[in-house]
Image (cartoon, rainbow, N blue to C red; front, side, top):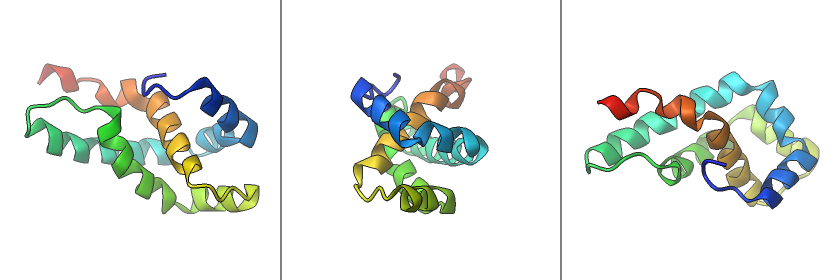
Length: 107
């Protein structure tokens, strides 16, 4: 995986239905990931650095947490542990990283 999520995390995400959550609302996650990426890009490019997944994770976790779709999913599945938020955001970035970074290397 792009961000290096462990295979155990991927199995856990599969077992709990997070892949379905991603697929059911893929446009929402794309929008949130794009916004977080673009904000991170403004911060790190000014410092002369490339955008890395870790730069985006800290911005994307709160955005995902605030979405009704994510909160409802956690509530229905009774998943209260905070690590699910980070695992899911890592999944989102892994699935979308190539799309997010397209064209940004040529500037």
